[in-house]
Length: 243
Image 1 (tube, helix red, strand yellow):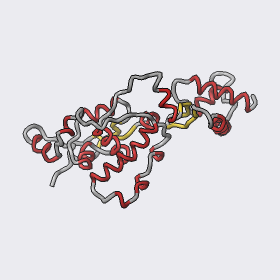
Image 2 (tube, helix red, strand yellow):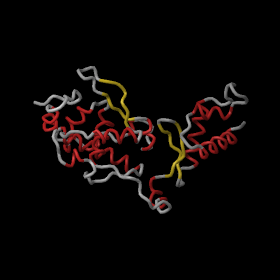
Image 3 (cartoon, one colour):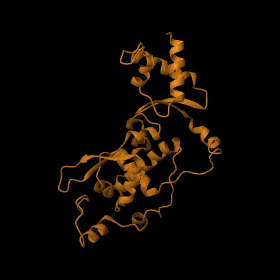
Image 4 (spheres, one colour):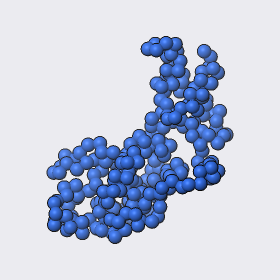
């Protein structure tokens, strides 16, 4: 099979796929029989994929490499037109959720206590659950301290939904400049939120500026207040000590 035919096969498979395909997945297209070695090496497929990217460079659809493989997707500038086909807006996430997600994305792995220390307010457990249910955040282990709090990190689904191939594709914090980062944890959280928002906008994922859906944050419950309330019930070992 020549390169032109191989490109046609790869293009068809990627356009028809319901999820991203890895290079190993694509190599299976060129196996003569099940279990046999592919007629195309991985490097050859990568070269053809790069050619396909160039072929589609001036169109409304682009071929992109993600953390889980390659896929075709619409370009961000097409969103305004595609939304007219589906006028119903997807559910928006609160500002508190965005801040929490940003801290996890840029400081991972982190515990709930780490997030509370940076944000300065108690984290609503429903905020973490929402991110886990969305498939963006998952527990990857426990910190070896009393209470063994869960360590939270982002998932490959998070990268795929934002159209990123790795965490290194997130906008670096240095882009804002040190002069805009006085050094407080609160300012650090705002910076991480600002940078993550750029990627979310690119992926057409909406976050609401209304915090009313998050009762813990809308009431501005501080970590110290939460600790005082916890002392009347069972202790929470996943919260950093207060001074």
